[in-house]
Image (tube, rainbow, N blue to C red; front, top):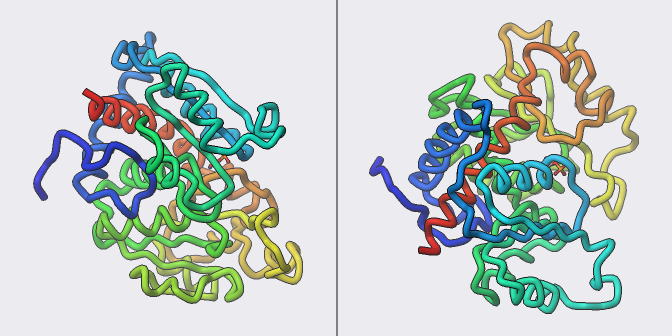
Length: 311
Ligand code: CP
């Protein structure tokens, strides 16, 4: 594959419209930044002339803190916006809100929004670089990038490896971005969950489907476990969380009964005792906290590469 020195897009709206060369450039840059953030002085001056607004119209712990730390480690000026305490509550539109913030000389926007396509809409209407920090059930591109980066720290060559994504696929932007990312990297991707939580179109994305969790785990080298997103379910897709845990929950007894080790991942937040037990989440097989650590380096890479597109 031809190496590239710059991203093909001025925005990160989703993994779907990134090229494999973009992914490799982000991973290579993130590796350098991971070295930086493990130094005693974790800061570089790369973005000292850049102002970034973090606009969160939906709750977040990991993504929000990770972006803010990434921006500060790059010496950017940072402003944070929460919809709940803003004039959105008085009826101001998304575009008016963002245009007002941009008129204060903001260069880049990181946005999480409950509406799928909200970041693409902004990108069509404003000049600043947009980074999608999760748009409804659509995409969460930086999560997929940090997931793939974390997988490659354990299994450097993902091409031909078996990656399972399990749980609530239907409502998960993490699942969709992971599918786009992993298939571009040449991994074999399978999804597993209750039939009601697997979209009917999923096989068109180049992934296979398994409804039995034991069989799925026996196939997998890596399992990325997702939570049930009750907050996005307009109707009940499962009879109860207790039954979900019984049929699709991953615990140590199940993992120990497999014929091989499986690397366990979770984007968070975890529902302990539902999709994953504590003895799995906190075990040596789990790389959940490594994912969170890598999130800062991967987001530094994305911000740095997008800022270079401004020059
Ligand atoms: N993984 C993730 O997006 O977590 P937050 O919702 O806490 O940002």
